[in-house]
Amino acid sequence: MDIERVLDVSARQAIRAEFRFDPELPLVVCVELLAEGGPHVLWRIGRDLLRQGLRETSGLGDVRLRPSNRADRATVWLRLVSKDMAALFELPVPPLAEWLAHTYELVPAGHEFTGVDWDVTTADLLDIR
Image (cartoon, rainbow, N blue to C red; front, side):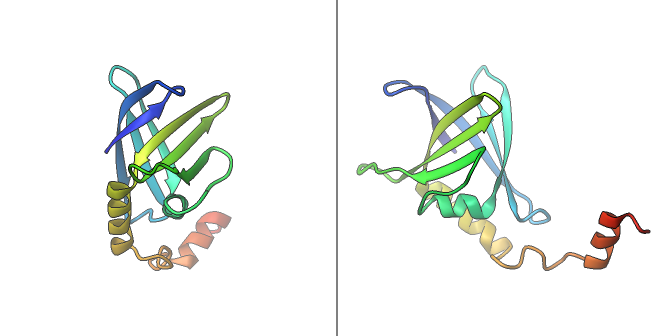
């Protein structure tokens, strides 16, 4: 997906963002930001947080989303913070919403833990095997 990094009021940078979803890890969406000539950056964002951010302000801390108020096209602002750095991106809603809806077809909301073997998970957490 083509997105823009907002550098200031009048300057933007075109960025390619690759969104990935693994049904084995259904709570998380991986977003790789690919700036031409720059490093590739990988962020893991909660799938529900991303979905909520399409409609209303969402997130705390390092990842925050909110719909823009642009009349000419539907976009969402994505703010990412790491240590003393922050970046603001503008993402188009229609392709993001379509892609995200597909992830919920693969793993419906509320079914993220359906395949978890809780006995094994608890034993792993408590290291009792």
